[in-house]
Every structure is written in C-alpha cells, then in structure tokens.
Image (cartoon, rainbow, N blue to C red; front, top):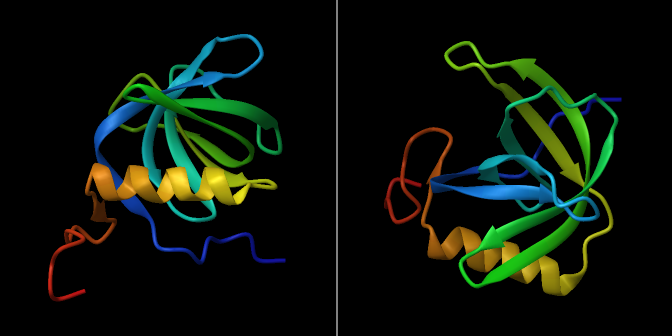
Length: 120
C-alpha cells in the first residue's frame, strides 16, 4: 500500500513547539502541516509506526491531536531528525483549528509559492 501523502503541504513561516500531551515532554518543532498530517524537526529520532499524543502550542491556544510517525530520518544540515506524521481520528474542531493555524501563519506550499500567489 502506498503511504505517500496526497494532501497539499504548507510550510510554516514560524516553527511552533510540539509536546507530548501526557508527559509534557518537548517533541520538536512543527515544520509543515496538511489536512492529513504534519512534519516535525526533533532533537531525537522518533520510531516509525509510533503513535504520539501531541499538543501544538498556538499563541494563547493549543491543538491536541494523535498522529502516527510514518517516517523519520537524520536531518542533513542539523543535529536533529525530520519526521512525518499522519493524523489519526481528528475531530472537526481540531481540523478547523489546523486550518486557522495555516491561514494565520500564511505559509508557502512546498514548491515555494505563497498561498496568495495567483500562480497556484
């Protein structure tokens, strides 16, 4: 089965801090997000297949979500790891918060164009 993402990814202009919900341990920084998942840069590797209960800090608010690590690799430029996650069951409220997040931090897609670029 092909595990590649089909949703359009948006790169954040500001990296948001991500924590494990239950332990409050820092997991990493949110790098990009889509309707179906997200990517993190983290100080430690995350095991492929591992399910994390994440809390993303967004200004005075936070988003709680569960996601499965689909891949993890050493970052070639930093002493860190890049990981891709797929959201598990996600509520309509959480999905709306994620959309508001992407709109507020207006991001560029991974091709480098901004969301307001008429060429999209």
